[in-house]
Length: 514
Ligand SMILES: Cc1cc2nc3c(=O)[nH]c(=O)nc-3n(C[C@H](O)[C@H](O)[C@H](O)COP(=O)(O)OP(=O)(O)OC[C@H]3O[C@@H](n4cnc5c(N)ncnc54)[C@H](O)[C@@H]3O)c2cc1C
Image 1 (cartoon, protein in one colour):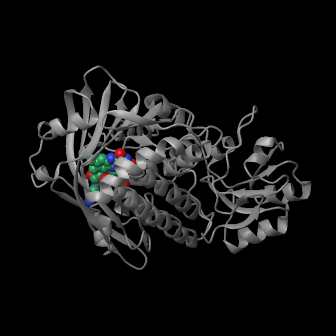
Image 2: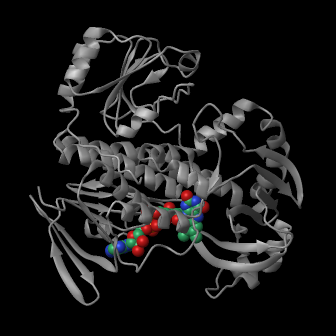
Image 3: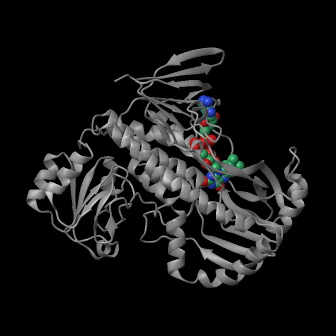
């Protein structure tokens, strides 16, 4: 094995999360970024519950939660008057150990991940740009540039986490079909008169909508809205240009502007996320409207999916065909996401009668009633937090026991003696039994070097759709691979053989400082 089998191109949130996960698996890699340091703009501000669950596996969730702000409420307003309030505090109670909406700006988040890598002795190589990539039958040849100096390097795998204008994607000649909306958006991090607001506000108006979120514990608010059409052709806009309309729609007075940017929203999904030993993840593979705060979170989800598969293959625990499931699992979700955020985006920004009807009549009349139903609020949480993502269609997924199928996220079962997510920190394959394990089955699973976790049968497990005494084979990323109502050792060995998996081949060491 070469000493650096993996090259990660791009140290945005996707590349950094991939690096951190690989580091926990003990896999050597290089991570490069053409910028001189981590991003300076707050961009994505919500870290969704599913990502916090992944971070719990790495032992870093408590710090991320402590660094962020839990949003308490979202007020939906028309002409400055609130007509519906969504209570976000514990909106996902019982669904996830992180049942809230956490605001943690992307620049702080990136710096945190860089520091975590550093604490493991890993440095991002800043100022290093991928210029060329050529994939041959048995090797990949890349040309990197630092300052005026070029370096040739032959990694075994390349992960293109290099954002929307991905060089990896263009070098691999992968199409990026989709389009760009004509609307121009503004984003600003500001201080407002009257002090910091911990609540979020969605303001609906004739010409569009504007959002205000709490961003920084230092007291900043994030404003997002549409640039008026009359101004959208200019490329020298400052906050002062949009101030009158923004302040009127948001019903605030801005005292200080910390950051202002305008951007066009795109909706594109790459034709492939994998070509041979090269992969795309994050914005390099999919870009879409920021509706629902999904972009960065989906990139981190890609990173986790790819990381454990690369680690298993490199460490000899799986055949290279495991890597083919990365594209099928993640591209399916990316396509669904782009289609759904596209619909939400069109509805919210639409001009003309239809758009105004949706924003000013339909939403104000339906939302207050809908939000009264706990089932609606829970569905909203499950969708936005990404805990509903499943890989039921994946070649890796099979079986059903109770309501839980192969491909589902392992449902979270809290208990006084520790929850069923704690063992996932091993980042290894494991079998879960809720009830009593059959000694013969446990013996075979243990001989296969599988961690066997037996949890007492509980009402909570029943409510989560698990079946008493069934066997659930759980992947390193916390998704159920295979579910069986019987603890059938033959089925378990057949699963491992058919997928050419050897368990217990990865060497996990949780560093003390992480
Ligand atoms: C204004 C704005 C607001 C946004 N708001 C939200 C939001 O509210 N919620 C949300 O979820 N998402 C939001 N997003 C999207 C979110 O920022 C992205 O989804 C996220 O940054 C994607 O992370 P990434 O790591 O995949 O790519 P990036 O963050 O783009 O990182 C890619 C990295 O690759 C590096 N790179 C590129 N090419 C090369 C090369 N050839 N060699 C070496 N390095 C290279 C770049 O320097 C960069 O650091 C917003 C984006 C913008 C622009």
